[in-house]
Image (cartoon, rainbow, N blue to C red):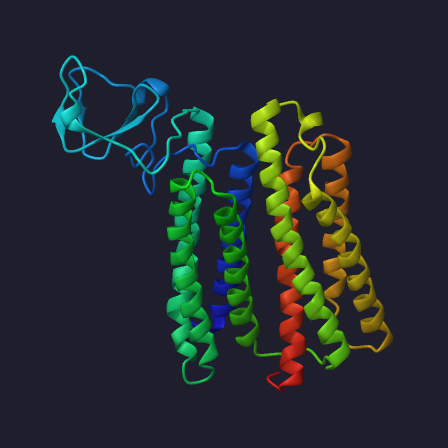
Length: 341
């Protein structure tokens, strides 16, 4: 089983990125409140397909926890009962966690598929966690990171609930994204430490220190980017689907985000130059620059060409892949400094 462990860990990593992609699609389509409750959707394991399914029905068998929309309020069935001709208030409680009552079938199913994908993707993560204990005697940090990964996934599930309960609180969405990147870092650590063959790379403290700064800047970029996206969401509420107005008169966060991209580009350009000049062997830094190039192109496309389809998802996902590569390079540099590999 140890022979296949790294493949399982890599599968877990891909699945976490698939969760990030699914979350980005939810954000792009504005589907975050497609299901007003968690973990079910309007109280169902399989969400309602039509708005008529969440409107009160006479002589209908309701199950405990089912949610309906009535007079711009969400009502939750207190227990199993059969309805009369009119609503009996004694059978219902008002849903108080938020007051979002809009129904959009497309948004509901996008959010539901996102949740379903998260559950399915969690399976290889769980398998990886269990198998990390095979390394307990060889390298105790591997099962420690496996435990942190599974705890992080649990925290993400709880945080997803609070995001819905808060009607998409911006800081909770940002925390949700940052936690996903932390989980990526844990899994990358597991993948690296479980290697059997290591490349002949050189340690250089200057390269490592600048790399750390580059990683921090990338994380800041992602955090600010989620806030810019939140501002775009607010604009969408005001102007609707008129994409040309989504970044009309943006606030300071947008300009900071754009300016930081120049600094990120320059730092990573220096890392490529320094790595090549001193023949350090950290060749994955080229992949970072490829990601940065894609980020710049997609950012320009969103600003100047009014958010072409899927560019928002692409922009976020490539950024998360980029910081993952940067962190893996840091692991390579760290291991050389501490003679782990």
